[in-house]
Every structure is written in C-alpha cells, then in structure tokens.
Length: 88
Image (tube, rainbow, N blue to C red):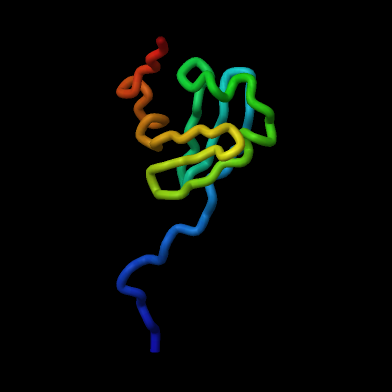
C-alpha cells in the first residue's frame, strides 16, 4: 500500500552562496539561483568572504547575514528596482 502525503514537507535546504565575482554574489535559494550585483547591494563589496558565505534563511522570503548584520527580503533581490537605495 502506497502512502501519499497531503502536503509537502518544509523546505530544509539552506541558502548557499555558489559564486563570488568582482561584480557580485550568486546565491542559490531553493531551486533558484539569484544574482546580487554589488552595484545594487554595495554592503557586500568589501565584506569578508567568510561573512558573505554565512547566510541564513529565517523565513522563506527573508535572508540574514549575521556577521554583517544584513537582512534582505528575497523580493528585493528578485526586483531591486522596486527597492531603491537611499542614503543620507
């Protein structure tokens, strides 16, 4: 007898930095690879490599880099034009 689950389980895969380049960071989230260009995400440009690789996903649409004290919504990576940088 085959048992079929009514709902899929929680996603247990961690976000993973797959590549660093002079232009930005490639990040694997679930089954998608997203690019964070330093032009749009300048906080990572001078960060230590180990700190960039230390990324957590406390919620499905939220990422956190504890060593850098950076929190990003996944939406801001997917649609950076909707989240312009503002500095004073």
